[in-house]
Structure formats: structure tokens, C-alpha cells
Amino acid sequence: MSEHMKKPHTESIAMVTWHGAHYALPVGIIEKYRVKEESKTDLSIDDVFGDLINEHGEPGLLLKGLRHREGLNQIELAKILNISQTNLSAMENGRRAIGKELAKRIGEKFKIDYRNFL
Image (cartoon, rainbow, N blue to C red; front, side, top):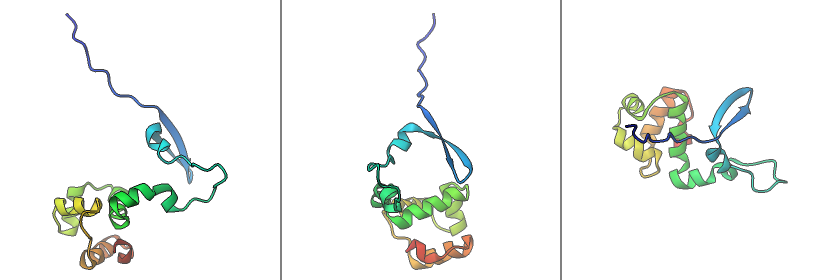
């Protein structure tokens, strides 16, 4: 007797080219960032990612972006910065401020201006 198998969740994928690199992204993600006004061609970061900035805070979102850019998970980045994974998660999600001392450590380790994280 055959058992009913759980059907895998599939989602339509869109191919996006940006600065010469190709990306496969779920359509559901792209839909969140659809341009609402057809005549508006110059978009600010707030226009596109305002909802994420409001939810996580800009410094936390930048920290999360840095972690992804470097290909690190939260545990790995927390070890590099000598903080707990719990604190890193709270900072990324806007529940905890990064602080000047830690921002300077991030700047030194990743060669970026620490003031971005304040």
C-alpha cells in the first residue's frame, strides 16, 4: 500500500540580472519590491527597503547584510566579534543597539566605516 507523500513546496523562480551577475529569486520575494509608481525610476534605499529598515533598524540590517556578504552564519560572526550569538541576533533584528565599541571592532575587522553601524 502506498502512502500519501507530502508534496514539496515549489514557487515560481524569476531570473534577475544585476551588474552583470545572474540571480534566481522566488517571485514571492520580488513581488514585495515591485515599483508602485510606473513613472518613478529613481528609487531611494528607503523606497525599496523601507519596510525592512522599519522592522530591523538600519544598523541591524547593515550588520545582517555584512554577515551574508562575508558568507558567515550568526555563530561564526559572533565568534569573530567576541559576542554571543543571542546578542548578535538581537542587534540584527533591531532589539539591541550595536554600540560604539562593537561598531569600531566591526569596522576594524571588515575594513568599513564603523559609523555605519551607529
